[in-house]
Image (cartoon, rainbow, N blue to C red; front, side, top):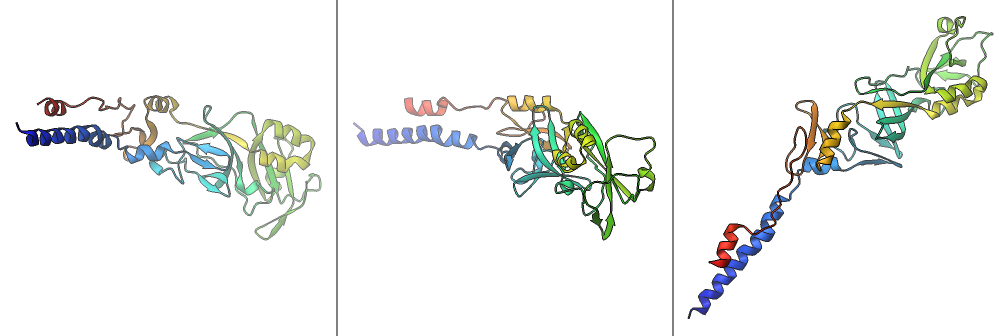
Length: 268
């Protein structure tokens, strides 16, 4: 008897049905922007980085202080103290960086003579390393120098090196300056017999092991979270799709069924 009334009711029911299926889930599925930001990786050259590293396309809340990276000419670099270290390789599972000093990358004559320093709050030296000591301005006839002299800050200096400590070595006392650079043990063994490989030893770099709670990050990742850093509490945080957590993410609530309101409208 009332076809128009029935048609309007049907249209209203259809409207609310579509709103429940389309409008509500769309609102619930908006990800926390920090979750999206820290989910991305840093790519520089052929190397990719994620937590605990940040920089460039990863905001500073994606990792702790001390892990900021820069990418220059497709080379990833990290700064520690007065040293800029170029990253040669990364092993996320073992938390190891293979690095080399940027100022010694093109030879043993840097613009400044600075010892190797690292951030011991977050890193430590790897294994199988030996110190290469470079001596500058010794002018001792008994010392075998290698290569050419260096001009550093306007001063011409001869250069020699040692990979072992000698009890009768006068250079630590009489030389103007010395710089210690870690190198691999195997490189030092080659260097003992062939001084011409010093540049290769410096370019080969050395290993650093970073120190973060990998188990905590793994549990966060297993719960579909993204590891990050709480800059307020200076502690680890797990970014989730909806909101951050100190530990892991809770299962996401999905709207897979029609709400009671929709059912009442359709059946009323």
